[in-house]
Amino acid sequence: MDLIRYSECSRRVFLSAAGAGVVALGGCAVVQREQMRPLLLKGALNGGRQPGSHPELPTTADEFIRAARDAVEAGAGAIHIHVRDNEANESLRSGDIARVLTAVRSATPATPIGVSTHFGIVGDAEQRQALVGTWSVLPDFASVNFNEPGAVMLARLLIEKGVGVEAGLFDAEATSTCVESGLANDCLRLMMEPRDRDLDDALSNVAEMEAVLDVAEVDRPRLLHGFRATAWPLIEEAARRGYATRAGLEDTFELADGRTARDNAEIVAEAAIRIATITGRG
Image (cartoon, rainbow, N blue to C red; front, side, top):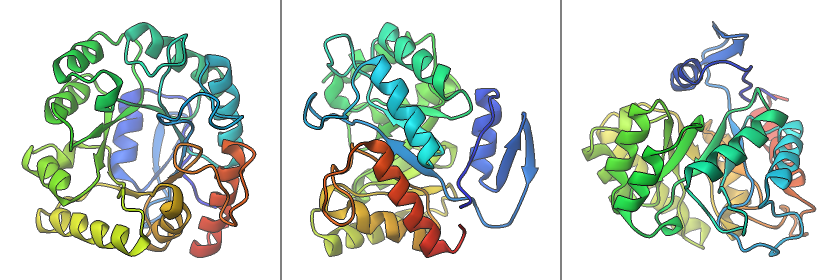
């Protein structure tokens, strides 16, 4: 399967390569490989889930190390984490960001690591902006939900710091906010993540988001994923469309057949198989 793989190199080289889309990295060299963008399967390890809600939900640095390493071995080409403090609460504090990123990179040095910045972590746009401004150890990318207060300001700050922005797009209104900000074409990826519980509703929502992007002629890599009941159908839909996607305990505790997954790696491995089956790129 032709999932994106990265060697250890600078963040700016990674961002340039990921933005171009049609690349493979060897050392720090960007090499043209084929005309079709490689499919990125991102491991979403924990989200805002409550500690203990799944036996293998990672919250500590050691747990993130194990979960990230296993997810990469299962086929993940990037890792997305909701950083936790020592009490397992979500955090944007510089010390917590540095501690978790340093730990995970020690285990998966060739894999891009991203973090969440969602509004609920702090609950105040100005405080969130200030905390991100103090980061000394930077993630390769960070998700910014464009339906949230202060999203445009935060995205600009991250881009200025050299951090790739994954634009979190929940609906057409959030997509319009992203486009009207003038930042859509500066984002690393446009992450369509419909919250609809019904698959038909989710696909209709995606069509509305894509219409906004298409009218604005935004040409950035697109990622599509769902949650719970729509997680597996949208992984498969992303593969059919040639989009990046993600898989892990953040989005579902279950495998496609309804069985409870053992851990993130089992979910990622099944997603990788399904992507390869649909695309024929095993």
